[in-house]
Image (cartoon, rainbow, N blue to C red; front, side, top):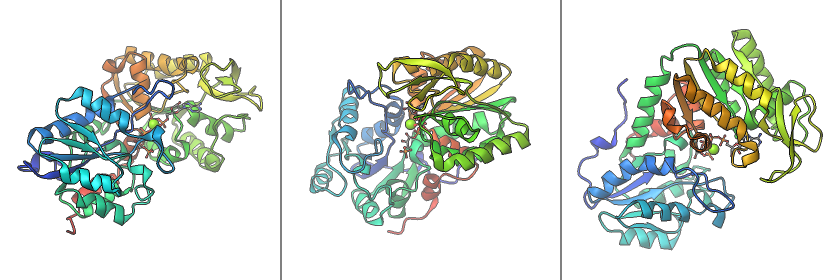
Length: 400
Ligand SMILES: Nc1ncnc2c1ncn2[C@@H]1O[C@H](COP(=O)(O)OP(=O)(O)O)[C@@H](O)[C@H]1O
Ligand SMILES: O=C(OP(=O)(O)O)[C@H](O)COP(=O)(O)O
Ligand SMILES: [Mg+2]
């Protein structure tokens, strides 16, 4: 498929030009140690950033991290900037938010061959609200815009769809590579084709499952996502993460799957605990036996066996969303065992999502996967078949 948008290879000479690059630096960070637990998204952005810096552009990188409600030290991009500076010899600097005087001055002072990172875009509510004023501010910093944030290109946010209205816009290396890989592996999947869906962004991702059910032969639902489906089936989920508002949609999806003959695997047993913390006591419980004060934090051993058995005939697997709170050792086994089983299958496996990739890396099997994608929700949205808003925006002529 020829891509109808401009790629960074079409950009021409950039020496001295200011280039605003939207990256996805939304990397998982261990709350206890402050360590970046998976750097795939940082590594993924390097081909584009390096190419621009090495050609002498003045590079301004912008990203969100987390879902902060206003400025918070916890969600600062400072650890990412420190990490980047360790990886690279060219100067990498952090400045304030887009609408701060500090940022204006830092952009003004930026020299060819330097990289400046603005503070977390979501500290400013204008980012998620797609505020044109914020988009114009960001555009005012640069001559050219590059979107390399595949993982966020399903969002109608100012830095994704707003800025390219005002600047000549290009897809970065990572963006182009992600689209090529997804097309190669998933446009005509070898069957049986299975999806594994988990994680915590339940209402976001439930919306994207209807189309997926039309594409796959079977679907495994685990992690936080499973709780809402189990609740839809009438199980009492106690204090588990359940999004009540999407229970009707979950019920409809289960009916759709049945009508289509798509196999659905839901947990039979789960690990439950009374508190959401690493060292909490826990027990394995059947989904029929979750007490009111307990929450499901991982799939149980019987479910792991069922999933591994279900996956044996699969020839293509798409995985987004961990099977449990894998960040806590006690609740990592479900995710790790599924990851290891996939690695042993020797079939086409695409794993996508900031946290899923961290989990597969923790399981030690990242190298065994056919494609590791930096996008979770973005990958699911891409598979719906319509162009991602961030890609669509690259095709519009700039308004000036
Ligand atoms: N049963 C559960 N209850 C609460 N959170 C869960 C559960 N299972 C998984 N999670 C959480 O889901 C998060 C990842 O979800 P999500 O962002 O949707 O995935 P990805 O980044 O791979 O797209 C992880 O931080 C993990 O701790
Ligand atoms: O981490 C992300 O997506 P993912 O959790 O689906 O992999 C992206 O950075 C998008 O973040 P958002 O879902 O808060 O818009
Ligand atoms: Mg995530």
